[in-house]
Length: 144
Image (cartoon, rainbow, N blue to C red; front, side, top):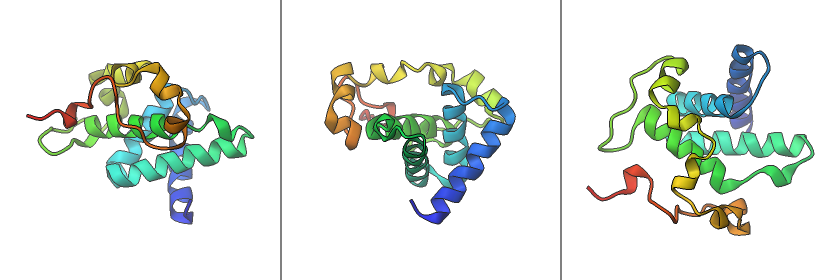
């Protein structure tokens, strides 16, 4: 992780934790990803969030908890809704509470099961690298 990535992730994490009373569950992961996507764009947010989560898991003594496909898939899904993709409008909300209210499916930890079979996500290939959705494509990948 570059120093810039580490500093950016740490600043976003501090911002999210300050507003959550120190709790860091799924909603806070989504909020951190929303902030990263809005401030840095989707490609940079993938690296920033994935590297930050990997570093956090390593520091917690549980590097095996990091999952490459799940981390990237969540960043792509949140970024798609927060900043859009070609041909798709972004959510105009400048406030995370409003964004979350308009996009409640992002707060459902099971959302990835719409796109991935559980066995795919459980595979070593998905844990250590990027695996494309195998149940249904992401909304922006569907030919128009």
